[in-house]
Amino acid sequence: MDIIKKTSYQCGKCHKVYVDENMANNCCEPYHCNVCGKETPRYVLVCEQCREKREYNKAQKMTLQEWEEKFPNHMIYYNDKFYGDIYEMLDDIDFDYNEFPAYCWGTDEVAMEVDPDNVLEGIVENTSCEDLDFSDEAYKEFKNIISYWNDKYRQHYYMQSDIIVLIPEELKKEYIS
Image 1 (tube, rainbow, N blue to C red):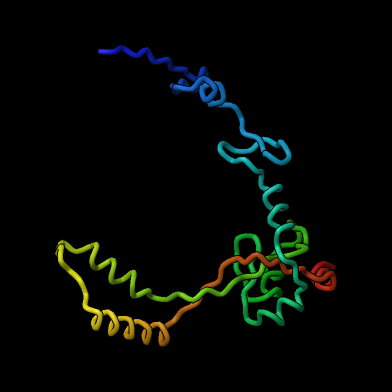
Image 2: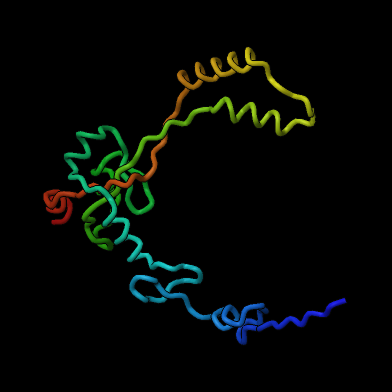
């Protein structure tokens, strides 16, 4: 029998044991933003400000008027909340404690539908019957039923898009006096 000697390394602060010396040395060291160097929470490699700046720079920008013309009745997203329109958003902000926002995010409307393939797969996977299989005719009928149901009861939800809606200065004058 061959004997293999293993070496391990222990973090001096929290006493976790590692096989790699570098991992033990860096175990309890603070994390820093890869962009600006600012200290970040554990495992966070880009600080909030740099992440927001990167997202802003990558996003398509639209004026409020362009947004409302191209996406009528779409919600907007700001500070982890969805709003029916810009006025609802601005009414919700307490300007005694918050600055007037220069922008908010647009949203994408997403349809919620039942997927017949996933339903049938789930039935087959979650049953103890090994030979369960549906005929082509049964599958087509089920798909037609689900399609009818989706058309009749389809629901929508909104999620943040990659479009920034620029808030006009005129609104700032209206809300901050």
